[in-house]
Image 1 (cartoon, rainbow, N blue to C red):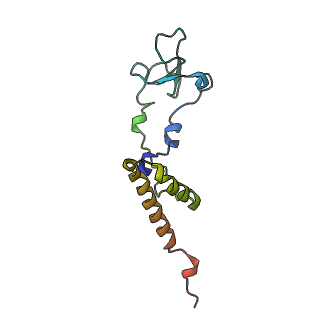
Image 2 (spheres, rainbow, N blue to C red):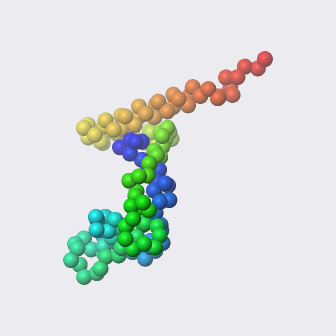
Length: 141
């Protein structure tokens, strides 16, 4: 997992309606189904198996009052998702120290991710140190 796996979902949320979210029953939901039969949204099921006696709740995400799927109104694949953190996020020094301490408990085969994280944090720190807009570097004449 790296910064390329985190996307800003504001554009995606703007393409969906939230009108039916209140009755969806997310609190008691056990399964969310996205199917080709209901392309306008998804189903919220209260059980892990489909032959449960409770009917699923259909949550429509497509904007408008149409009862059928209309690709021109609701095509989430056409939305370009931008990276949430394109420059990376600098972690606090205490957090890095804690992660470094806990690294001894991580199996050797999985330490590569943390080593990459520490390297990226070092690069972000170096980038902050050589900030060209630093007012201390300005010479007064």
